[in-house]
Length: 89
Image (cartoon, rainbow, N blue to C red; front, side, top):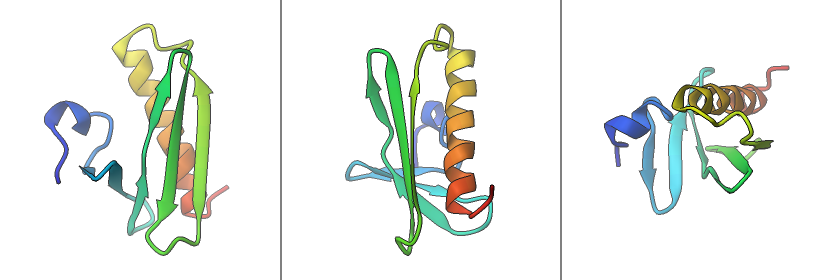
């Protein structure tokens, strides 16, 4: 299912269903994951369609004092995951 307009800011071109998000990779293809967290931390995950690569990023939400900081932190985590799944250093 396509994501809503507000989630589109966090997951551009993303889809979501049954607890998993499907998102495009910059190197082509897609990956699957589920982000989440609680007071003080957030974790992002990703697995390639073929299951050959996976990545997990866990971080403090100390910078999450504004929506802009939260978006910056989410984008940085997404980039780490995508680079790992694309085999980039």
